[in-house]
Image (cartoon, rainbow, N blue to C red; front, side):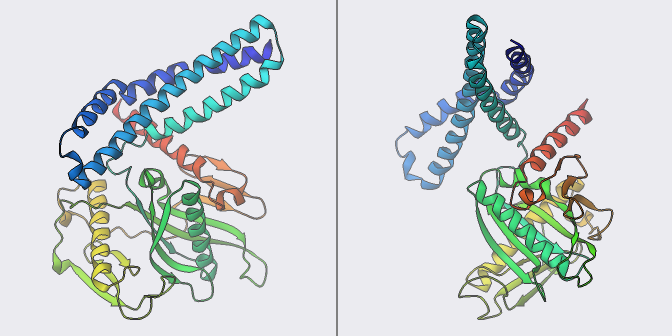
Amino acid sequence: MVELDAIKTELQTYELPMKEMKASLQLEDKAKRVEELEREMEAQGFWDDTERSQIYMKELKNLKDNIETFHTLESQVEDIKTLLEMGYEENDPSLVGEIKEEFKTFSEAFETMRITTLLSGEYDKNNAILKLNAGAGGTESCDWANMLYRMYTRWAESKGFTVDVLDMLDGEEAGIKSVTFQINGENAFGYLKSEKGVHRLVRISPFNAQGKRQTSFVSLDVMPEIEEDLDIDIDEGDLRIDTYRSSGAGGQHINKTSSAIRITHIPTGVVVQCQNERSQHMNKDKAMQMLKAKLYMIKKEANAEKLSDIRGEVKDIGWGNQIRSYVLQPYTLVKDHRTDAEVGQADSVLNGNIDPFINAYLRWINTSAANQTE
């Protein structure tokens, strides 16, 4: 049957990717590591160290999940092959629907795992800290920043991740001028690092009395939450530390005292802010943690030996720097300018469906890295 032939042909295209995935996962090494962890966890006194036991349990779970997921994929392939044989032998058209459904389930699971295997960066598994800044466009840009904040929180919710607002500055008329927030969940940074850059909105602005199309821009910075002590020297003389009264959402402790902290690293121009903790001291500690993480990532990206080699690069939040455009009028289209990935249903994207862009970016960056090593 023609439909069975088509499914069989498509299934064959997964043979090489499955072999490549199996090799990249290093399943034998993972199985050995599982045995090592389980032996250590059986040792006397292991559970007395709560912090270490939690780290081991997390690693063990991740290893077992990877092994089990790949074995499930292999089983799905065998099940589909068996169903195909039955379909050919019995010449039963009623099996086609079942086989298609099985193949769809397999292909979706394969794609999900393939993306996960691309998350191999040093801090990809960490929580992510995002900072949105409204650019050119006034109130329209502030509203756009608020729309993007909503988009990322919706995406986080769909993954079962949690969101903590660290700092927020409301717009004068509507929206937000800037917001720093942390998304907590496994691989949050690995996924969201793809979103760093300038995001462009084109629509008929509700704030434009003449009903004209307007273009506005918002920049997004993304960095990992790094809790361990980083090997990075910061000269106290290079810092300007300001205190201010908190604004925006923050609960009963907000606006009582000037407990919010803004730290500027003068040589690079990097600014971090925190207002959501219960005291000025805690806000300062969190802000310093963010600053160290940001400077570490800048240093790493620039391949600099020391921090003093780094100087800030000022980029306009506007034309020429955007990574993605969101067009709402006269048609709807969201397009990533790096990968050329696009989605016609802009509302779906703004409601948090950004996985097509994240996945396309991870494939693109992985292919680019592979080409550079050849």
